[in-house]
Length: 265
Image (tube, rainbow, N blue to C red; front, side, top):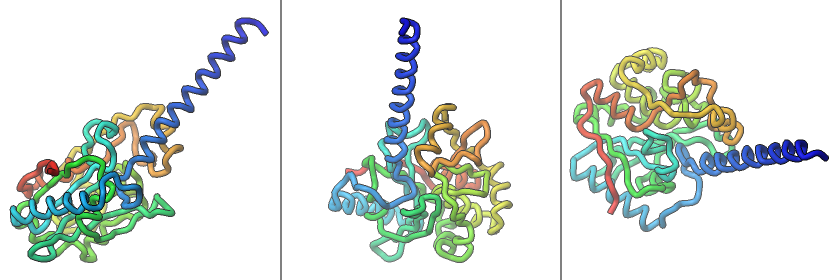
């Protein structure tokens, strides 16, 4: 075997190892994304999660909030794409003088490409928390009152698209994730319609979705590694909905009271 052939074989093996190594790296990152799900291994103890849930509850009660949007990071922030601070959001609605009930969208366990709507508690909402803080978005008082009547209603449910994508494009109606569902729910409330096409058209002038910097290699291997990474609804740019976009929608309609990060103690 000539020296040139040996060099070519060696280069070929290095390329294969590099590709497999990068694929393994992506697999570790993507499988760690606990976005619209409540299944997985908790990082914090149940006692800590209960305490963090209590801190959110006390924060909202102190501000006399009836409905807020709360977000958590289901992945270490250093591994999240630029511009993404949280991976999962939900509505927190006051159900008593001392407590809140949480309205979520989660993807199924067996078929992660289908989602369902579920209510749970602040502690359960934080079950897959990976960073010790939460994003808080508080609509103005009038919008909170409207949301109290809207959330859980047939019109609210009508905004749910069961086909799930981890990074669904908010301007495409074929797939949806938790943040996009909330975006459409808020839009339906603000604009008094359950026509998803009408909501989408209004959203195109109300917000600028979060742009994800996805390399050609990641675009190719991502959907192979994690079936939740559907890219058929994205063109040249990969756009998705984050908690920042939910705040932007409320702000654009003059319905936002405040938006901030709550660091747990």
